[in-house]
Image 1 (cartoon, rainbow, N blue to C red):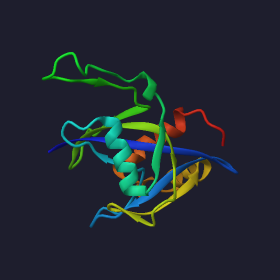
Image 2 (spheres, rainbow, N blue to C red; image 1 turned 90 degrees about the vertical axis):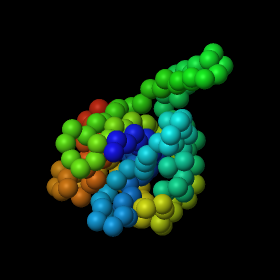
Image 3 (cartoon, rainbow, N blue to C red; image 1 turned 135 degrees about the horizontal axis):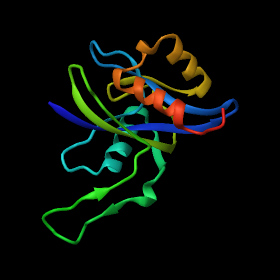
Image 4 (cartoon, one colour; image 1 turned 60 degrees about the horizontal axis):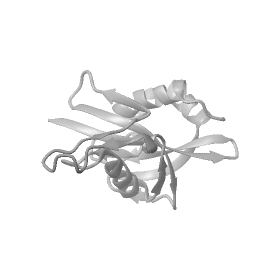
Length: 162
């Protein structure tokens, strides 16, 4: 099987700087810290998938996706074939492992109250970038295989206040 995913870096400004939503994956044999996101359904828009996954897993409503204003589509040109082009923050691809997947990470803003338990997730919470740096440095294996690389990329390349 090959999967395509949309994943979210949901940011907010807290008292100690930028914070991200982190949750625990709650599937049998797959408990790990992760970012919100998941599989894109057949012919589902990437942004719609991202919004849906964030809501299902965290209870939050996405209010802004960085780069969304650059989106271009071919709707109305050929009724039998439509395409959209978008700009994610970064993209991942699995190079080895039991699941072959590719996914796009987006930087988002969201509103609402975090679920205690979401769709195959639990314990969604806001974490400071400093605490995430410490957590990934001390025990990278506590994060999901995919999001370990995504978080390292974000922490290295995102310019934010912390």
